[in-house]
Amino acid sequence: MPWLAVLLLLVAVPAGAQPPRELRWAADPEGGAPYVEADPADPSRVQGFEVEIADLVARALGRPPRFVFVAYASIDQSVARGDVELGLNGLEDTPARRGAMALTIPYYEFREVLSVRSADASRFRTLSDLKGRRVGTLGGTLAYEILLGAGARYGIEAVSYDDDTHPYSDLQLGRVDAVLLDNVIAERRGRQMTGVTIQPETVAIGHYVGVLAPQNTAMRDDVSAALLGAMRDGSLERILRKWRVWNDDQPALYAKLLTGAPTSPVTAAGDGAAAPSATRWQTTRRYLPTLLRAAGVTLVLSCVSMAAAVALGVLIASGRVYGAAPLRLVLTGYVELMRGTPILLQLFVIYYGLAAAIKLPAFVAALTGLALNYAAYESEIYRGALESVSTGQLEAARTLGFTERQILTLIRGPQAFRLALAPMTNDFVALLKDSSLVSVLTVVELTKQTQIFAANIGSWVIPGSLCAALYLAMSLPLAAAARRLERRWKAATS
Image (tube, rainbow, N blue to C red; front, side, top):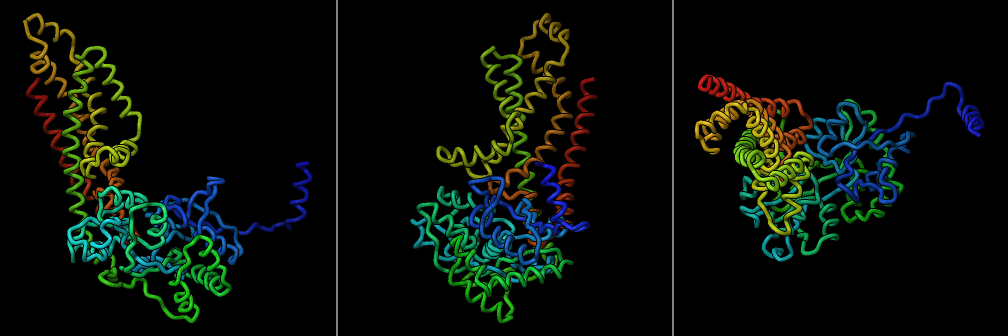
């Protein structure tokens, strides 16, 4: 009976006793196994070696664990602002992270390795063999920083992804020539894919750590003590063996930690370039040129996409106003399809879904997706503007002998354009901001580059301010020019 259960609970829990506070820890399940993934048997739960490490730490602290989903690039910021206490998600020990956060001792040593198509395995063995080539990786990681350095040395183009799945699928499709990522990720993908070879050479060595807020050093020490205890009693090794990530690199790391020897955040090997330690202002100066270039990509992409959207929108609107019934039906279906589905989904379909039939370059796919989506919205603006011109003017023009083409170009079109100018400008500004979505297609525009910058220094204050300033610098002159054009057009047609 329910009342009996309540009575037993009251007897079991002393008056005034409080349940132990939860240990809120953050990770991003999108990274998948063996780190953190949704449990196939119960998608509401997560599993992976990071999950079991979090459970181990929570038990040592005497607190029940509670998983909190946070996007990978935002884990540091979420920990710093107090949303969660601990971040565990293959987070790398880097100089920038050491300067911004409180880091636990390392609990895993990984190697940055190159994956290439098996047909190219004899040609592309090291970064120096990839001169002028495209190499994919995760943005905001040690591997990305290494590729930026390799870009200066060898002319390598670093292609940034938001997940660790599409770099390898693009490698198979020939969109990139290699992928540089942790050996844990590379070995997992190597077991799942054919035609991909992992090169044995180590580009760099790094460590996974737990991340806590910079002021939370006491808890950092408690978590580190729990990890050391798990190394001593073998429980950490058992977790890593269970998830098939234990290897010969770990015993040496554990021996070093148990004897109190310090660990280096990044160790370069071969022709790898370790990420240099730098202050936030030094990093800002280093990233500023890349932000400016990314702003240029955003501006070019937005302008060309908008021009194509305007042209397509005019054609669609004209077809819906003047076309036959079947054509109007088809065009209406297109407009509703593009307006009724997310633009992010459309971009994925164009770039990844159609890759088996046509492999569009990332920039072309991004331009196409934005243009097709915004053409639907533009067409509604123009159709409404065309239909807003009074019927009396149209009938008068027909009475005077004007053809339908003359009526459109000389009477209806100019008035409709003046009415459509303001909403069209608003759409252009919206497209300028929506262009940030194309980062899912590996196009590094302004927002994506800002995310990478913020992940590198562990703060959004400086990167966010610079990003906002650049967006304003692009959008405000556009809005001012549109208002001026609208005034002049209004004066000319009044």
